[in-house]
Length: 546
Image (tube, rainbow, N blue to C red; front, top):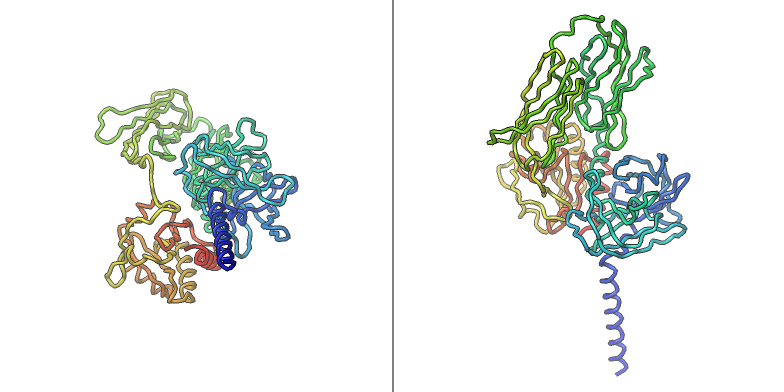
């Protein structure tokens, strides 16, 4: 009887432990505590969330202030020097990076799946405390501010909790607490996790491929103005520094639109004068690039200005319902744009009768997944006119799905170099690290060499597969590429780039981590900075994911 009672007590204890564990693994799981950090600046202590095994930490940009090297405390007595690698003031988001082993990252959920009144829990350190605290509540609204998605919750939040994690019932990160410092009426707001994920991808790309001015065109020069055009390797802002000396002294107004192709107008110049200038660009993470210095000489006053022309046309910021068209004219002129969808006979139009050099129109109320034709026209005060028909553009679907975190990979069928097929069935029950690549991409070459070295030492009986996928490539080019770099790892081909298109990858190379159920658990765009970064990420994924 005593023995029976002891067994019963033991079973009750086990049930209690199991029940407690189940409760802890629901909304607000304490597993998040291992991914929370304290960030110390000269003037503040704030929260942060480890979001990537390479050492990326998300926190609030405004609370971070101007510091560039904050101290990051993972747990009492374990601190690291961090460096700010990306600032997005519009999202009040900053990314800090540290070099530390064995980091525990939060599992990032898909914030597009969040619905009003979903249960959530906010976890973070309150001011003056050394332990993380939980606050539970529900999602009360899903607002947008300047096209940026937020979640609003009725969970009790303290202003000191900016940078804290907001979790769903599965313990996944769906937001980061924001808007609590000096923002009356914005209490309880959290930046959606997909916004954080998008900035993280850009930060990875910026680190692997630093922003540079790729080329600068010969300026279009007139007696009192000039047009400076240049290209950057990634979307960035545009501005020109200029002056009568090589110390410049003047700057044009900042064009904050993130573009690869830039054009800036210098106005109010003096005829027959030499000017020094250089182009400046800043990417979304605050990284800067400058061209070398150049000179131009303005023409004489009253000199023949030449034919009236349109130049530097750009169509950008294309969404499912809108697009922006911008161009520059050689003389002050009006601007007009007409546009129509395929198979529609009556075009829409917009116009502006102001006499200006720079023209910009936002085309709204477009249809999703539709091809549009566009014609632009400008007219001077002397009835000189210029007209140009642009290359058609297409709007994306209204709700693109793509390859998202915590969703299953699309069905695929890659080709082997031997002529066979490699499909979803071949990865069933395996963990997977796959890198999408192109043979003409220098960054892809580095990723191939990194992965090849990791593969060489990887156990062949492992339940994890490591391979590369060459998209839209000819087999001959892939074979020559493999021979040139001595690759021994598997390289498959996706000649039509079907999976890349379905996943809507914005960057090549892009790497996917899949668990044993072929579910995407991490996406890395732009490649790893070093072989060690790649190897560490693969090993940590292998150890932490089922």
